[in-house]
Image (cartoon, rainbow, N blue to C red; front, side, top):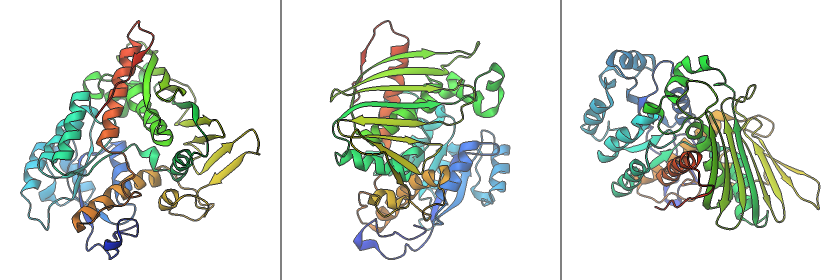
Length: 402
């Protein structure tokens, strides 16, 4: 969509948006995996520029990282506190339009709240924060301060995930009876695997929070399942394991799910499944049809039934719904993947900001990105799974409400 508002925002805002949006970043310095992904995703369509940041835990590292990224030296900050204060004093024609929070989990809440309270829109990596109480502060803060807030559950940005959601919403699968979502990885299978930078904070309770594997990738499973099916979780029963000796957080988990409509589900996630990479997969069975989608082959959605041959929906074709088409950049046969899906979250988030700045209402397609409520539900899910895994009670109710 580039630096234009585009046809999906509002009929009153078809004209080209007059400038690029100004982006700030907290975290994401040298050797940080997810920060680089956020930057590339945000700038994928050409309508965003990175102009400020506090990129690391020390002023020296932050400055070095900012210079790597060609950020103006006077807008490279030694701490996020300094950045929030200084950027809030910027004149209107220089002020940031949004801030991306790509720190380890323990900083998501304080950084988000600091920028929310100063009137900045925020995109935050998942999971949203450590506690449900913190999550509700973010939900309420974003609402009370008129903040556009995104949580980058990026797998909902894939075109065929949007196609799957639309087919479920339209009743094409009938009433949903069963869902299985799984996310096996193998990168933390050995004790020594915890020594690298990306693993170190994810296996540290002080920085990662109450959960390891369940928080890191199990939260993606919960969000993907909820997004596609729209099912509301009633109760769950979890079996949580830490296989690697000396590790403080879980590295494997299996969860049985009961939904309010009577459907049943299984969520299984692991970071010690040797040989697996990022094999996120979901299958949904209804009374009429079923669907299957896998992240490592994301351009295809499989539809099955008892009456017809298997159908394969492909990204980029005219038979897909508008939301899937809006999330597609390349013609058929040219694979799109992780960066594009991540970029679709940012595309909708930044288009929502453009609509806000233009004083118009963003339409349904633009509003289709995970927000603080989805983030808060994910935090509640993580806590309930860990509680269940540590409890002798077989089933625990899931009573999340906003």
